[in-house]
Image (cartoon, rainbow, N blue to C red):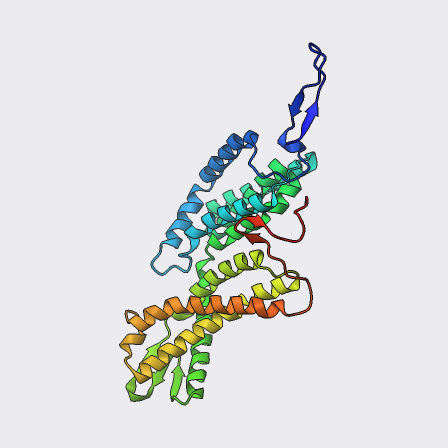
Amino acid sequence: MLLQKEPDPVKGTVPPRRASYREHLRPIHFFPLALRWPSLILLLAAGGLFYWTIGRMWLRWNNTHSYYSHGPLIVPIAIVTAWLIIKSRGLPMHSTRSSRSVALTMLTVALLIHLASMYALVTFVSGFMIIPVLAACVLYIGGWPMLGRLWFPIAFLAFMIPLPDLTINDINFRLKMFAAAASTAIVNGVGIPAYLKGAEIFLTGGKHLTVEDACSGLRSLISLLAFATLFTYACKLRGYKRILLFLSAVPVAVAANIVRIVVLTLVADQGSVALATPGGWVHDLMGFIVFVIAFCFLFLMEEVLDLLPGARSEKWLVAGVWTGSKKPTLQ
């Protein structure tokens, strides 16, 4: 804790004075007492402002056919990530008049867009405004150093905001048709006759499978992108290797879903179609295994990219303790 001295006119001594959190020029590893009530008030105010938006998103998260069933997990993950960052790297604070001016401008614009989106019933835009509102609050309280330290958990909240239904349907259809065509080609490649008509895969013996919307892989793609983003941020890779690891999440998710459809097609051809359709244990099991396959691919990609020339790998967060070669510095 920084200490500053002021003359005491009575005793003639110079007693220490506890510095304000705004005067800290080095990272601190605790949350200042002076910010607890203001932060709680800001949190309650944000909850009231976005009550309608959060309610609409909650309905999307809990919909039976939702592609955002992972939504409720995003906020706890972001909070834990922020806590690990503060514990391991410290929380620098240096609020200035210019940073507070930028924060107020950002907050005003974001709230105006949020109110307009509520009036137009556009949940996606309204939900996305949660991110600049939180960023503006952090910028106002701790300045650019604090925002630079906490930008990732704030940006990570984007994965809880459902895309518009029209966009979801378009992406879903394209992924479904691509996965069905690729799976049929692979099945033919291993010597099993199959042909594709629309989204249906026809096999010998009058058997056929329908690639439903839920089998397009979009749900696993969205969930895996969230995991890959978190994994890329905390992994040991640095520089361009981290970007390549993140970009690999999309083809990895698509490839894992194609493997799933191929396995179900082979089970339907060699065994029972009932096992490969919803309700069958093979179908349900493969819905879980597709994530295992994707995660294994990501870990393998990390090791492969680590062999490439470039920035030296360095572990960042291990059980909340800094283990790098250098101590954290003020950013």
